[in-house]
Image 1 (cartoon, one colour):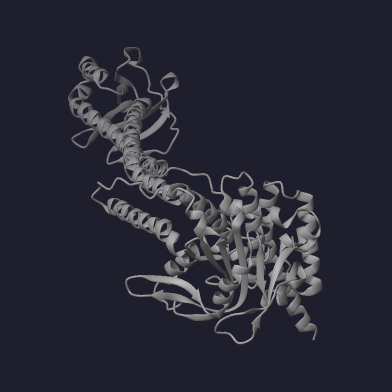
Image 2 (spheres, rainbow, N blue to C red):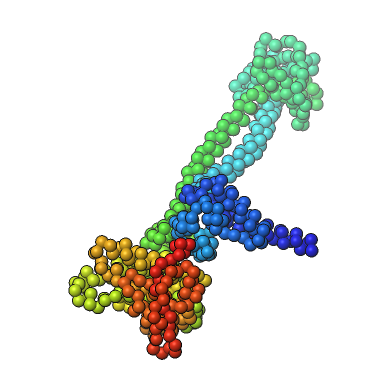
Length: 570
């Protein structure tokens, strides 16, 4: 038992959470339109939650607000109708169902900031190019630096080979002049800081600095590892003011006899400068490539984003009802085909819109909606339904037409029909047809409302009030001559006619009685049948009329004249 109660509690909380989220959104609408305050909404939601836990049934938020006296039902209904562009007459209507039917979800979300596709594409391409070029530049520069160093070593080896080959005989003969003339050639080679020749006793025989000739050579302390390639030995050392120096040396051999050594000093800064020059070239090249890539990315991004923006604009225009808007479809790619499809869709939507506006005037918006939603079903076939029929007719219309010009008569009739139609639709009724100067309306079909009888009564009372107010100016005497009758019962509703011309209508005894008893209603009056009194007699103030004998029916039909609505029924 305890487990069952816990499960029920979780289920109830889940239902309340979902409803509360929807009610919060509707509540925000009421706050925005100054129907209730934030504090009143919070209080109403708390009361709604308490009622749910007490009764086990969720009470609509609107009814709670009305019960608390924060707003009237009319104010709430008007706010919901204006915000969601729907048509409800009371809080008992399926408001959420109507909202979903027109495609407007209660879960409204704030749109995220929009970043143009061309900008996204441009940034993506730039990042990819920067990463690619940067990675390649790093690899290339490292390899280039290594190549430059190896190139310097090879250059030094060439110099060593040249000096070693040409210094053998002069060194053997101790020809100082020839040795120094040979060493002087190193001064014109890029990157060479010094060159010298020493004998086996470490005495300098030749030097690019003539002041060092005859002195004992002082070995430079290496600052890095000592490496060798064949007979060539090389290492780096500190050159003082000239920076690090690569010292390279090779022995001078003549007939397998060692005569001395040749030393060459190469500038490491020279090698680094070559590296910096290469790096500057790569950086400039990278910037040029990125700039060209940016231009290309922007151009291509704009090329692809422009038609998409056009499609977005077309969607917005279609949502506004502007189905004549067209998208440029001259591209020969997928976007062009999509634009063509959008234009075709606009044409079809325009056709449907025209059909709704034109055809809907003949069959009624409710019937048209059912036809469009279920074109293949057989719902239009005759069916028996409980409904309430309203019949409105003008007293003395035939004699009146003999005294009025046709154009004036048509204008007055149109005003009468406009008022009647507007109020009938407002209360959820369906205008079946105009029969000369009469209006036949039905409540409960084709859209089924459980309170169809109450809706019909309220529509009739409001119609007579509207006729009276509009006719007070005296410009349209017809409005004061309208008699209305109401009868509720079983009707047969469906599509009647031929393949060439069909009409959705209602027939049956209820319709016949409503038309018959209409003759008992004088101008500005409403008469109702006994079925109406049995169901809603508590909201009507009436007086009984003489029971009527109707052809084709056994017994008498009780009829009542409505003199007013009771206070709570207003």
